[in-house]
Length: 194
Image (cartoon, rainbow, N blue to C red; front, side, top):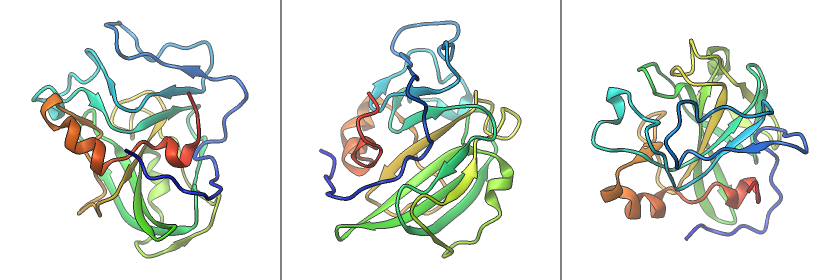
């Protein structure tokens, strides 16, 4: 169950009125094809045949964040005031590439937000740096710097402080129940995207 907050949040990516909800649950040669550059990949979705890189060995195919796609260079905003908690470049194939984790206090609940697949220029910050509601904290990266994925931000919440600029964005069936408790549905701050 995700926490509920009676607060107003800023969009992580400012979306147009029309965007595509992607369906990764069926085998496909190209899950990312859409008639619009703005897309949403769902939370707690079992993604068939998407994670083929060695990083995901062990049948890690349950997605634990929300993917918000857009053109390379699209600004990524802080959904709420807080601070930069961790920065990193997870450069393995299929990984997050440039990644920022922010820390926020929401109605007394400390929550961490991972923003993965960013451009490397997004990493020009320092841990502890304050961020304002709606501030641009990064930009969508291209495939050469974002782990090899079409441009999008993987946005994930955590109720546990991460030890590095990383969180498991996809988990195995065996780890799913525990992961859903630690990594709540991002729609609790993103709103009803789908």
